[in-house]
Image (cartoon, rainbow, N blue to C red; front, side):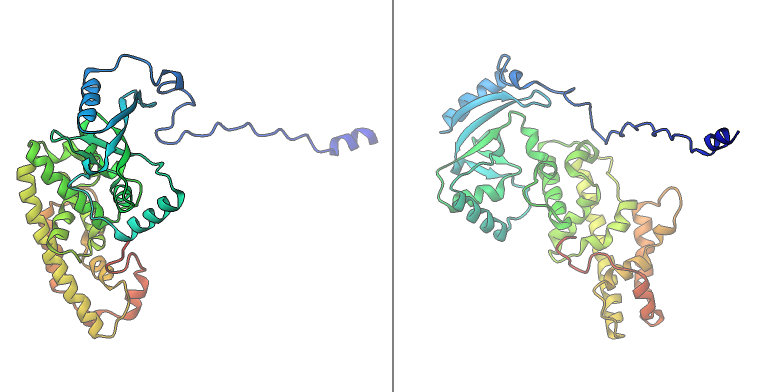
Length: 337
């Protein structure tokens, strides 16, 4: 009896929990299930367009070092040495950062090697556009290099994938917006496709509106208005020629709003407010869209109402606790907008 009671009191052995299979992340495939094997990258007949590109590279004073199929999609790519004077950035790229070029120049010079090929596409004029290597290109030019190594892609559309391809220096809002509006103007000269046809290239529709604003005012603080634009500024379902005219109108409305917000910020400063987040505070106060449930109003209607609210902004009704409770966000003109 005593033995049985003792046995009854002994704790039962716990079972180890079943191992959970980790969830796959977005775009994550099974290991080794996609693309080409290493031994297949140089196999296959070279397409005619690649053969033609090979001849053109030679005619342009370059040299083909090899051709292969890139491992994910199997697209043919040429590794080549190009005369450095024949390589240029795409004309719709962000402005060059002299500080970043200086850093790259110093690093490449100390290393004594150029190990990061540019991605390029050949234009009809025999110029090689690079959508992702402008800083590296200028660093090599500063060092007096005669040539540069590049991956030459037969598909010229790659030149317009600039925001996705450019990883050597992170973009801020201004840089993205300027690149997107320049890209849209360039694409409008090639055809009249819709904005949504280039959703991948543009990333966000409101970059187009902000781009026009930055063209007109280089000191514009676009990041302060992203909370508004994300809700109401979508891709315009019209040809680029027509949609660019609409972007000009939308930008004019946004710049008018910015003037009203600036006046409100000035009034707050005159009342003794010194927070670096005053612009964000004012925008938040006049942005009624954050209370809208369901479908958002049209861009023009929303901007008209927000602008009216900004013009009626009364600094006398604001106290310091209101500003403190609003939190932060990027300060006015912050570099990382």
